[in-house]
Length: 221
Image 1: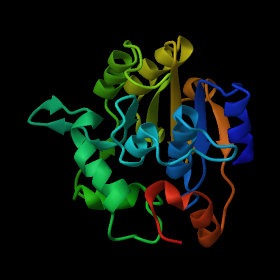
Image 2: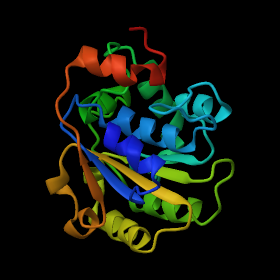
Image 3: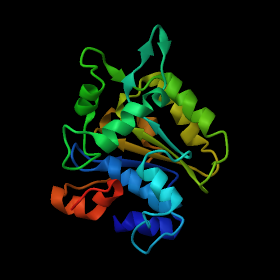
């Protein structure tokens, strides 16, 4: 997306953005691409280099300044579980997902539920994740100039979580951006939505999108 690239080049991007598009439009890989380009150590005119240490870590979802929040089974043995406990499953889903191998990252909540074998338990983003966001963004970025919190399917936040996240969005920490990836903005708390700059993702043919950003995940074209 040329407008996103330009916003980074001109340093005029919003600190909190909502990548909004229905299932299959690639909101997740686009949000990852945005952060990768932002912190690339050898940024090109229209893409990240893909080979610097920062790019390689982001490609593997292992960059210490890139934090992920996603809906999951919120409780385990009567205690809330944060998204960070799901990172092994999340990396496997994003990078090595086998049921839908055409384009990695183009999955929906139903596929994630299947991956977690949670068809009998409702996935949600619990309040402990909001506390995790606050805790992680209290510290300065470890390697990059800017750290990022990517919230996938924020419509799965309960009211308590959303209200706690709202406080962070109202007073954002320095050198921190928030990337929300949603399929249903109408399910977001209105006050949270009002703090986000929306990036509408139009429908794109799979082959064209694969050629454009598929190399983020080393997909053969």
